[in-house]
Image 1 (cartoon, one colour):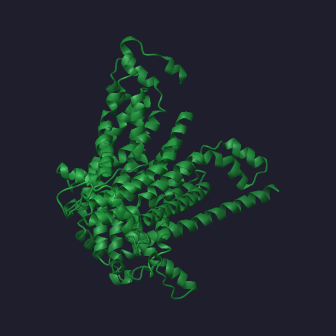
Image 2 (tube, one colour; image 1 turned 90 degrees about the vertical axis):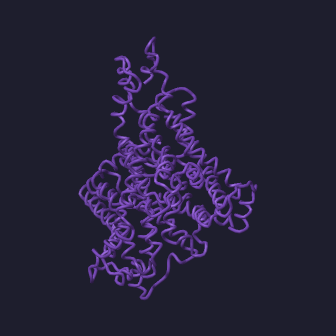
Image 3 (cartoon, helix red, strand yellow; image 1 turned 30 degrees about the horizontal axis):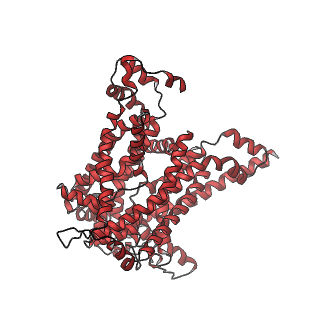
Length: 300
Length: 282
């Protein structure tokens, strides 16, 4: 690697060292106009009274945020969004890591299982929501199974204001588990075979092999998966809309659902403010991730 | 001693497969079976959500009603158009940039790369896209959704592609320069073919994400003519009383999910390889 770098461009072939910027012009335009500009406009609109009811847009300072706190219980919605994100991430990663350990070796049987567990990744989150709305329906298969031991059991799972947020978060975990399993399997493939063999030869039991031989090599995959699931779940939307629509009451009204509600009734400025809260939450969570990726990049 | 431990490990193997089978049946088999079998039943029978076979087969009626009510052919073509156009644009923008980011050492390029991948974790705002769409006359149309998708996914694509491009050997490119090839030609004839594996897996990942997207369409598309498949599913399912029309809801779930599942069966091996190869690079 260093040898090839040492070959310096000479004379007329000097173009090879520079001139790459031309290939990055399209992406520079795309991220400026379609990524940063919307974010910028959003942080402006969040402080305005833009709505479907008047033709002018004027600056209203922190009014929208005051409305969010006073009328929409903003701290509650933030807490709800965090509960959802942490549950979805924890359940999803626990399942994915267990499956990855069980399906680590690339045997034919394991390939078949990996493919089966990947099916839910392909479903649209909306479709996944309808599937589980059926399973968890008072008349659905879950209650039918429970009724075998406890006849007439007809609990409305998604109608429970304490359980609903955890259940919809678990649907989220179910939807993505196949994808994160593959990432853990990729992480496990970086564990040197000699290390595992040596550990087994020294009499280590399964847990010790996992803890001391495999886990250190899984660290990057764990950090990646945990952060991506937490951050992804903060922007959750489809699954909740398909299952509870934000209810019962406000029990699953996470921030993005709130944004849609406000947008739907024409309060565009308020919707922007709610959306800005999501942006801030994600940014505060993402900084450690970016820091981590940079650090790994330097090491690699 | 040896035989007993071998026997024990064989018993462990059988136990492992038994547990995995039970988990797969409960978490994948039962939900999918419930959806498919109930989509074949009459409305009254599907309302019981039982896992048994239909007493009266109503499949053709259900599916033809759903295809008509949700204007499935139209939504399908819209989804196809949005997905194809978005994915094509994504790669036209991200592939050259990924190579440039992998090779360039200048500080501005490193800064640009850092800015370009922020979107991997921080989603762009959707409400201003409505505002922007209105001001350029694209409000509610498919091109507005395509532009939103471009801004939403370009970070992920350039992130995956750059990680791969960094690992490519530079010697072939240098040989091309020595032969007098331009940068553009080198990119097209030398670099692009080498990037095929990662382009393939990134293609699958973005296709799945764009095809299934619902947040963007819900905010950005107006009018029945512009609906994509997930939007059609939502409008159909929220417009009818779910508890009494599970047969229609599930028939639509099947119709919306089928295109990707067919694609998956065709290219299954490549997805698994692609995710496994490219994933942990970042």
